[in-house]
Length: 129
Image 1 (tube, rainbow, N blue to C red):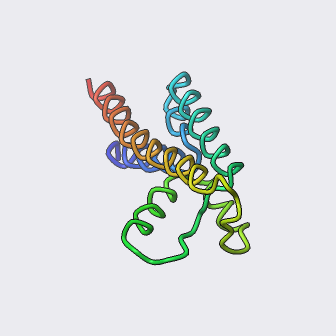
Image 2: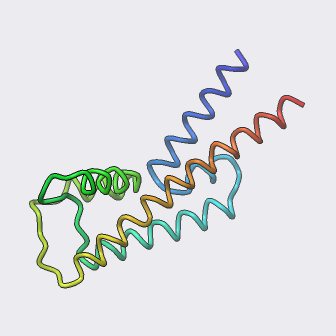
């Protein structure tokens, strides 16, 4: 039964960390880390959105597919923006810079989620002692 609780803790904190970057760390009691991750990643994503960054590619190739996967790791902000979009708009003169500012927090959240696994492992090892 104890292993089941560990699994639930792992999956729920990972889900929270994906949905809102940094929330998984906050859930596990890492307030400072979670707050820094949350503020920096969401601010960078919002800046990319304000600069007119793109969410969907207009042509199909492997780089655009990989970019979409990285953007997907922005979590809830990306899912909301994806649901609210009406069509591809590349009208902004800062489109490519904005897209970079959307890609960067997605990649950072991937790294934060990997770090979250280390935090979970550390908590589980502390409980087993």
